[in-house]
Length: 79
Image (cartoon, rainbow, N blue to C red):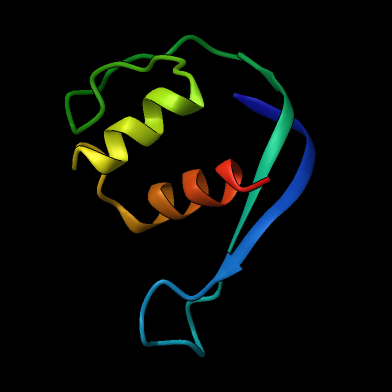
């Protein structure tokens, strides 16, 4: 995917190592598919577009757990 029109969303440190792991998340208002998704068997098996509401529901049901995705979704929901 190619993301255009990037906007700063949030900057944070995901752990106590606050001197070496500064994380910056952006959101994009323009996304283009530049290549079809091909599963490689190592992890992700498919991709799908979902509404913000569906993603937040997955966060609160414990289906999305990683700190980067949760932080980005919650920050975006506040914009």
